[in-house]
Image (cartoon, rainbow, N blue to C red; front, top):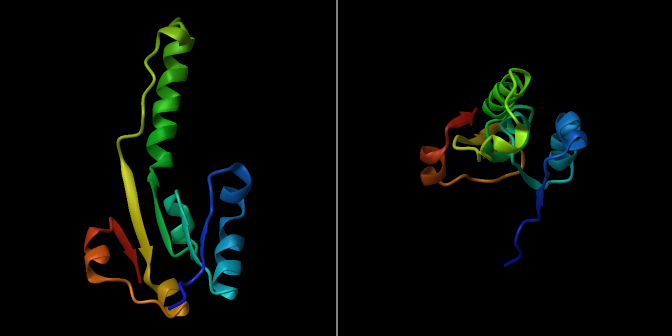
Length: 113
């Protein structure tokens, strides 16, 4: 049995800016595509799983605020994301002829129909 090709859209300013185009091309070429940002699935990507950009930007703003108030950047702790979002786009799955297992649908934070 041959596996369906899978593509992964990595995080970069270019892939984020062109996420809708990447999603359209993936569907056109029948590629199941995953990306680490939920906005990808919202514009037609199959699956996304990653840290919340909104939350990361809030933390970045808090760091900038602390630095502007005199904190030394080297004294600030390094933090890792704690909130991750799993999104499945069922419309895209249908267009690709894929059936998403019920267990995955139940685990998703958001299912786009």
